[in-house]
Each structure stands twice: as structure tokens, then as C-alpha cells.
Image (cartoon, rainbow, N blue to C red; front, side, top):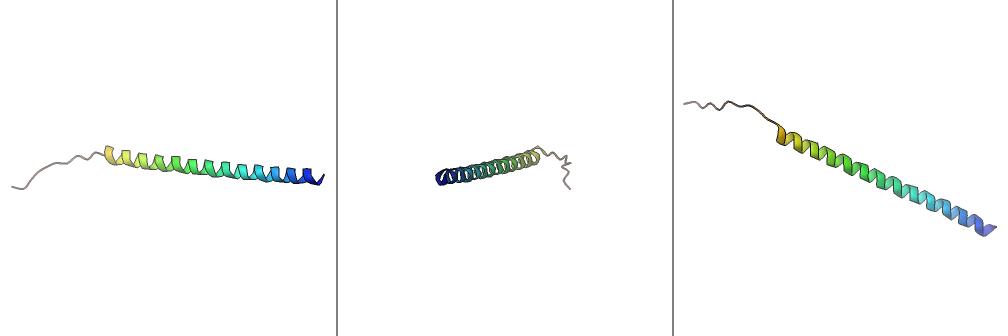
Length: 59
């Protein structure tokens, strides 16, 4: 009986580690998507900005 208790405990630890890795991967993926979205939208805003100017020179 002692052996099965160790197996169940190690299985629970493995499940916990697996969930921890999944959480880290999903957090990393979410951060990457957020970063790419912010950089992409900032780049789009920078290059799509238009300003009307009147080129008049003193002379």
C-alpha cells in the first residue's frame, strides 16, 4: 500500500507541474500577442497620420 501512495502523490505533483507549465505558456503567449498588437497598432497610427500643411515661404 505504501508504494501506491507514493505513485498517487507523484502523479499529483506531475499534474501540478503540468498545469503550472500550461499557465506559464498561456501567460507568455498572451503577453506576446498583446505586445505585437500594441506595436502593430502604434506603427499603423504613426504611418497613417496625415497633417495638412500650407507651404508658404517668405519672400
